[in-house]
Image 1 (cartoon, rainbow, N blue to C red):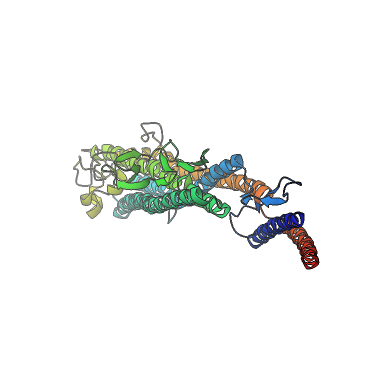
Image 2 (image 1 turned 120 degrees about the vertical axis):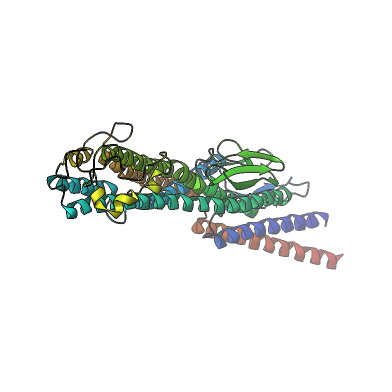
Length: 455
């Protein structure tokens, strides 16, 4: 009888093990389309056989996972988020410097064409008015583009500030997931932690690593630790006293580490690059063009005289420095009010002289911009060309990173994805084994019943 009771114990453990297999296979099938779900499996372990009890048992469910592949996916996630966000942001910047009417180089062409026409008839009031109008349109065009570039950079700054709040919330969730995993080791919690890390990577890039203790650490580019096990730091955005833009820091208790220049991936990295590099370069180039235009034109204009014979008057309001010159560029108010003040003649030569007009027109072909290396037109074209090149490179990067991410996702699916046909086969196999053991247990139970009746 003791042997039959032992066999009942073997049957019970077998049914329990096979039912665990059924549950895992059914769960895999149910989550076949769940984003980030990793296929789970249950491992069977044979117990010591007769004359001991024998049988089978299962361990805790495990999931299919490759740590090296997970790191590659994490890196690719940050790179893709950055390239896609930067491509979108730099396209907005490209519109700011080149869209909405004639480009700066076209407006410069109009100004020099009007100067050429005025040089042929320097006393003609309509032609003189055309020069003043063209100069005003050019100044307004540069001002508008400077404002649009500033708005694009401000939009990026607003996105950065909002993203830091989201990143801090995700860091807190990641730390909580670490704590839950330390208590249970549930594969579903591991999947959830990976998904949180992925979302965090899309914002800040960096790297998530799982150490030997099973806890995930999240480290930003540059080495700042955002999450350490069950403890999360805070990503804070505070206004820079010089620029007014947000400076980013990882705040951990009383310790604070500036990471503004270190974050080089994720959507925050993209907006930082747009705000502090590409956008700042475009703004600086516009300021330089405005400064060079005003100073070179003013140098010639003040040396010549208007119809009243007076010289020494500027054509544009003189800029005090390069920084901010584009946003303040304007035709001198007195000239804007009266085209008779336009200095097209050399001093003491009479109103019919065109020396000043020819000298102003000649500035169109002289290298008076960018430190004496470029013409005004070429410098204006450079502003647009540099942003256009950055936009084209960003699109190429987004395409490349998309292909890399798709390839890595395919590798992950082949390793950890759910093959429903395979799981249906496993489900049938476990169910058949469970049914078979149920028959064995039923048979043993009948034998025990007969034995007891015959005693």
